[in-house]
Length: 118
Length: 292
Image (cartoon, rainbow over all chains, first blue to last red; front, side, top):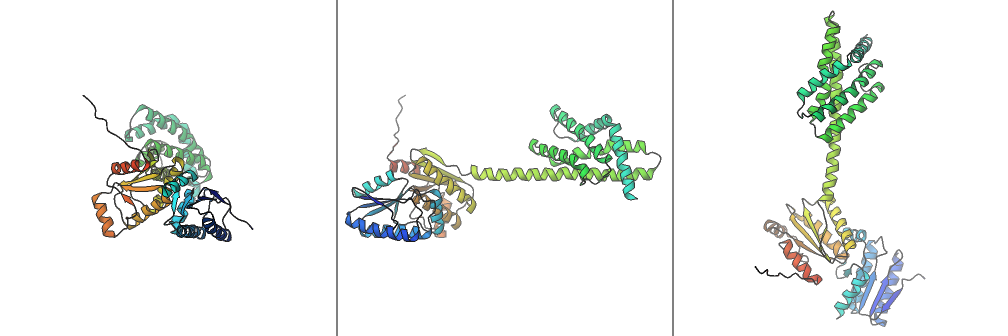
């Protein structure tokens, strides 16, 4: 079954979405992430969506749900690398990802998580 | 019978133009220069050149037998030249009256020759003058129509340029962008503003964008909504926004309208916003007292 790899960097989990997200893949990722946060005792989750050209409302909600779950499990979520077109689409859809931190690229995202953790 | 006499008149007119080319040109130029507002040697030379080009085309079209119907195929070349002349006039800033006068001024010298040729039959002379006059009226109107069309194209282009010009995104400092908004924000402009801001954030890797609304005359709920959308999109890209340049009246309007700007940092001036942005990005400016 197709899965999106979750990489571990210390106490951070790095998810780079390189393929077009379909709904089932998004649900699997959500499951995997919540499991991994607990097993790896992660304090931060970094979701890189720089390769995504299209984000629909389902994926947008999935991202905010993931962030909410991570928060309950005491981990912070940062979404990085959103394309301008994607940002405009999400805003037009009314999904502003409240409660999710954002950063321009992975480097900045990691810095943000480190500061937040310190 | 009408067509026949029309054709006859057209042939006659063509003959006059061909025979008295130089004299007509002189008469035409004299009339033109008398009416012209802009008077200089270069303009006169250009006029003369255009007139000299147009005369043989006119004669050719008249002689070809399509008589006075300027929509006809025989008039293609003439219409094209008139179009070119009109379009040049627009670029050079001539008035529509100047442009139309170019055609109308040829009437008088032509009438003079018609009068000379048809002295015997006053009726025929009257007919000839009426149809010639009609022809040049139509040609004159054609110049105005083309002039108008060219003007509209200029306006359209300027509109687009204004749209792009009025939304500049400037980098004030490392990691700090400024977006001075000028003019009313409507949906079309918000789209342009949003796109250019987000692209600039990607290009420069900015952390903070200052949206300065000093140049926005009024802020209603729609404008505020557009602003909040732009800010939300920038936040999704990982950049924070500060709104600056809020005038007292606009602050009052915002409060009266009940627009919620609580989640957005606002400052009265661009300078204040810049200081905050510098602090956030870890830079600072110090004043050095100069010794005299």
